[in-house]
Image (cartoon, rainbow, N blue to C red; front, side):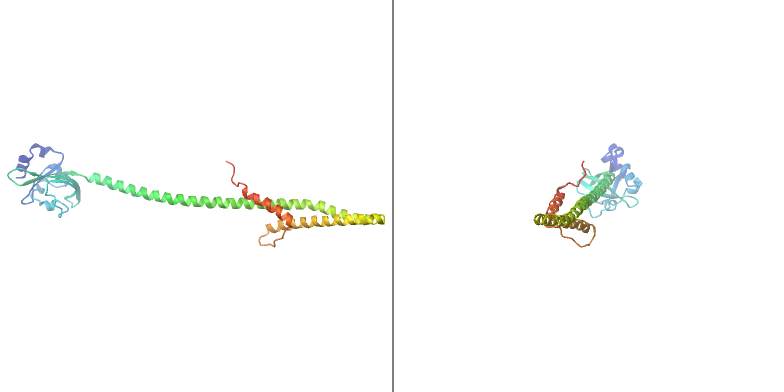
Length: 263
């Protein structure tokens, strides 16, 4: 009966079509005819599908596909009980019997490609999120490194200034020592001058002696201050007011010096 129905309804088209075709009796809901393409798709023998109830052929028994129209993602049951997804076109056949013709198009490959696209999109999204986190960490590391480089550079500059000041103070010690020695020699020599000359020279000598002691005190303070900056936790030595102001003005200018290497 199935072949006669197929020939009566579809003729040569039913037998030669590359589409999956089958016919269902609307009264009994049994499959009355199928073509070879559908039997191949579902891995059934052609005659084994004849008489199968429509609800057993469809993997979703609760889904109504008897109304003429187009249906997306219909799961047909394969012989190994594995779902095969198809697009289904349904049409009622005009004739003596109440028949419904179905045309099924396999969408399994499309669904597989869609799943692959979704999986790749998800992987890409995850990789992008990881890249953003890595970039943020890199920016933070870069910022910390630049800050650390500036600190190291400033420490090096300040240490260099300390060594420079210590070097200057060291070289000043020689003339200061010579000046102190000269003052002592002058005090001796003044004793051989006439008394009226001694008064004037003694006053001048006292002035020179005060200046010498002041210079010597400043040099010693600079030496001690430069040494205390090298020792961690050492005692701090206060510089003379005018020397401290001069050094502070110089050191403050270090903050304006670029610590970046020239490009």
